[in-house]
Image (cartoon, rainbow, N blue to C red):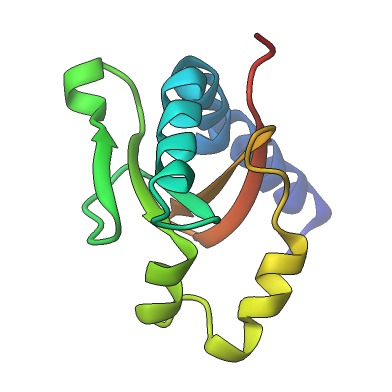
Length: 129
């Protein structure tokens, strides 16, 4: 492969990155997501809310923000650490490591982002009030 091919691939990837549109949607959804995170914690469902961001069909958590209804690019589901462990997405033996790395849920939303290339956890700051 030529270096030029690598450069072209990287340039196209940056330009077409779905994560740019996710950032826009997360800023738009920020207050709604924060309210749901607080609700999950106050109701004792979990101390570790996780939000699943995706653009396709996912059977994880409960739909809270529908991209079709809101005319945005991303669906957001609400879930918890407990569901992720139950479904084997986070292995039981790695649960404590996840907890140790989990950021303050009053300041950051934990977003499990699913894109065609894979999935990963992102901690995205809530907007300032």
